[in-house]
Image (cartoon, rainbow, N blue to C red; front, side, top):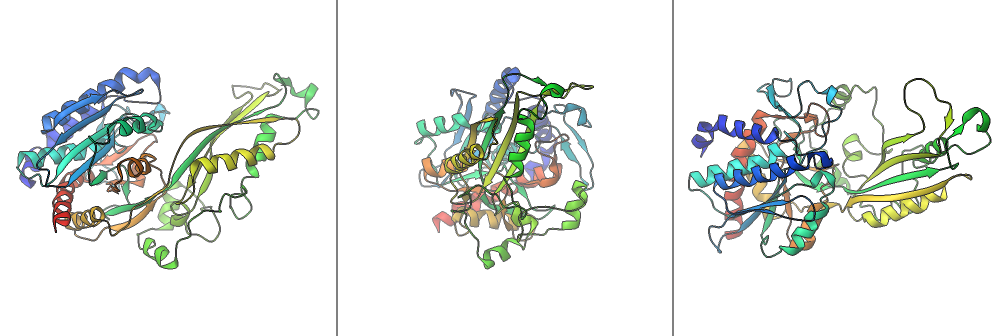
Length: 460
C-alpha cells in the first residue's frame, strides 16, 4: 500500500487541488451552483476510488454525498463523515494568493510545504484523505472493514439538514463507529486524538431605542443610545475574574478531576510561542485555569460581531435607532444549548437599561461531546497513530464544536472517533488557510491502519 500511495502522490495532490478550486461557500447563495458542483465532484471521486451505491442525496438544503464498500456482514462497519462546504474567503484582500487557486508554499511550521486555499484543512483536505486512503486499500486488496461515506454540504452553516437526512436513513447509515477528520493535532509531529468537543449556543441580539436615527446634538443626553446600551450590557456578561455572570450558567458544568486535568496537561504547549504567534502581550481568561483549559474544558462567551450607527467615511453625528451583536457561547459536557440560550435571553433582557427594548434571536447550536478512551475505535486510532508517527497519541479536548457528533450518537447509537491531522496554526476560517502536504499524506498513510486495528479489535 505504501508503494501505491508513493506512485500516485502527485495525482492525489492534483485531485485535491481540483476540489479546492470549487468555491463551495454554503453561507452565500451566490455560490449555490459551485456547492452543487462540489457535491457532484465528491461523488465522482468516490466512484473512481472504488465505492459503490454512490449517490448525491437531496435534502431540503444542500445534498449529502453517500457511498459504500461492503466486504462482509461479518466485518465491522465504519462510517466516514466529512463536509465539502467551506467558509467564505472574506476578507479576500488579506490572502497572499487567491483563496480558490491552491498553491504550495513553504512555511516555518510546514518545511515540506503547505497547501494554501480555502478548505485546504477544513475540511476538503481532511475528508479527501479518507477517499484516497480508501482508494489505496481497494487497489491493493486490503479492506478489512465495511466502509460507508457521508459527506455533507452544510457543516459551515450548522448542518441543519444533516439531521433530516440521518433520521431518514438510519438503516443505510448503520455502523459500529464513525470516523471523522475535522479536528487537528496539538502540535507539529505530535499525533493527537480529540476526546471531547465543546457545545455551542449562538445568538443575535438587537437593541432598539428611538424610532429613527437622531441628531446627536439635538437629542444626545436626552434619549437612550442603543449602541451605548448594548456595549454596557455586553460588559456586564463577565465579572472581573472573567466568569460569565448569567444566573444558572455554571449549574451543570462538568468539573474535571485533578488527575484528568493532569492527563490533558501532557499535551505540549508553549505559552510564549502561543503569544508570539498571535502577537499578544498577554493572554486572558477565566481565573484559576490554564490557557489550554480555558479553551477546551471551560465554557466561554464571546462577541463575534457588533454593529450599528454610521461607520462610513468621515463624520455623521447620529444616535442610531438600533444596535446589534452576534454572540457565541461554547459549552462543556452537561450544558444543554437550548437551556443556555434561554438563560442568556432572560438575563440579557433583564439587564437592558430604561429607554431601549431587546430582541434575542437564537441561531444554531450543538451539544457537547466526550468519547471514552477505552472505546475500541479510540484504541484502534491510538494504535494507528502510534505506528504512523512512532509515538503515542495525546488525548486532547477541543475548544471547537461539531454539533452533528452528538446527533450521530443520539440517532445512530454509536461513538465518533475524532482523528484530525490539521494544526491550530493552519488558519482555518481565516485568510491564508493552509494544510501541510506532509500532514495530508500522513493521514492517507494512517487511516488504513485504523481500519486494520479496528477490525482486529472487534473480532478479538
